[in-house]
Length: 92
Image (cartoon, rainbow, N blue to C red; front, side, top):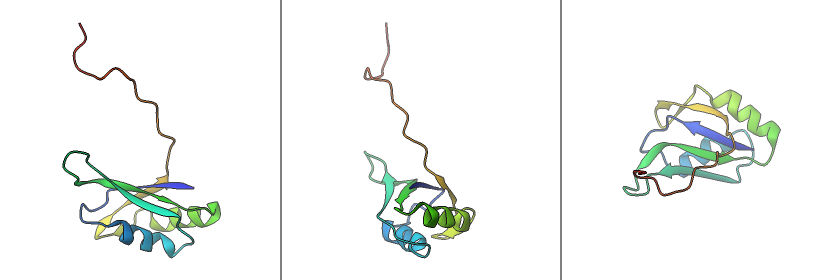
């Protein structure tokens, strides 16, 4: 199951995120999303757990809990929505 973790501290690390979730079961990956230009954390990340029961237990336990000194929002990640193509900018 792919899990969304929001309101992370900008100083949180992927290892710290992994460790928080490993208390509830196997973690196959953890990643914190960063800005493409500045490489600074965007304050959210994702954790992948192969066992759905363990993932649900982690969500229940960690939602509203603290990771890196901040109260985090944890829930099942929604599928990524398709983005429109076209390059943006003005259209005349």
